[in-house]
Length: 357
Image (tube, rainbow, N blue to C red; front, side):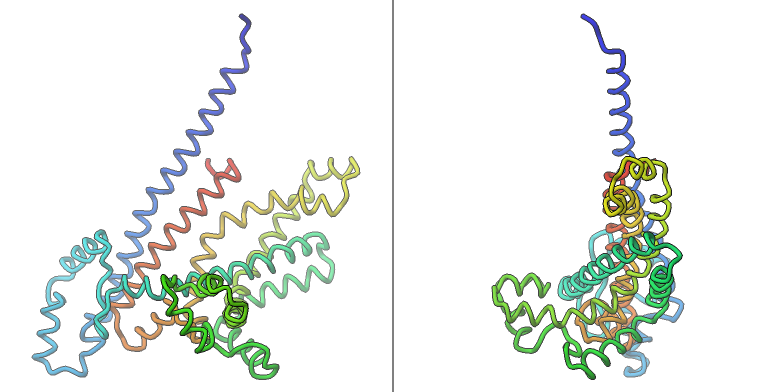
């Protein structure tokens, strides 16, 4: 029986590609641990630069004897290296500490307020993608014309504008002057009471609002989300715009696009299909970093709009000088960012095999 000489080669190639993907995923997964270790270590020792957390948060309200008792009970009178090793051991067990001002476990704070921050980041990412990608495509298509110059200027402006200033400006225009949107909070008081008391509440208001099936509740939640989402999303939209524009300019000048144009393919299809898809891969690869930026920006955004999420709570604990809480929340966010980057890397590798090597 005749055999196809190319078949073993094809099989070896397929095995090599599968092995490359598996090896890539394994390496990226293993990199989570040193990344989290480095971030947690930096947070721990930076917090110790200011002294011990007990003295920083409640030292002025206790007598020297009471302060010493609190320090001994919390273990802060031991050598720093001993505290560090114990802290690492607690993190491995999922214990990120207990706040010193209100005696709450950090994991409880994450569970209670993490949904609100995740919801805001999701809204902001939608805004960034909806604005950044189409405008980047258009800017590439009209390269070096006045719309392109305008879009690039807007991208720089949105990225350079401080988050809190952008939020205050949007509140001034759309809430105070025009009266179109609420000033802040995640929902009105009535709707918040409804959503917080439904059975099995997720803490993500849009999901809980959809579960009620009440159009007024859903509308109230979405109206409160518009300004915070715009404030945080515009920060990343400018990055996406410039990234899509740069990659699409390269794609539009490639040989395969010229070949498709010579075959009579319509210009709109060239931009939408032939040039856009290759330009989309860099967006996916940097999305993990942008999510980290959105989590950082959520601190100021949530504080500006009274959005009760992790960023809002982190700011409150900073004001109270509760550095145990700050350390725990930041360490937990570091874990979330590391895992998110791993997921994004895997998705990028599945879409573009070149990423694996």
